[in-house]
Length: 84
Picture 1 (cartoon, rainbow, N blue to C red):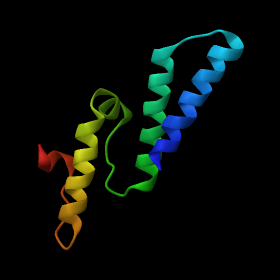
Picture 2 (cartoon, one colour):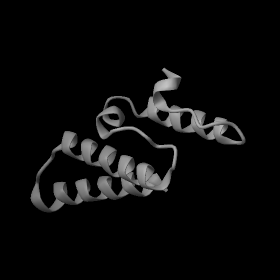
Picture 3 (cartoon, rainbow, N blue to C red):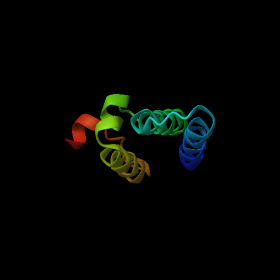
């Protein structure tokens, strides 16, 4: 479902280029990351990280969610600080 946030921001970026003649790739990239982070942190009980962590390296955050999800199946929950 996080693909919806990516597609939506790319569509909005395309519309800004067509109708306003404005190109701001970094703003679009940041908004995509913000929307995906917002969606993941609201939908996953294992997403315990800040936007700054997500912005720097989203793959590490996704791996933490997957790692926590695997450990949670019958085992005690592992926090971010215990993984490091």
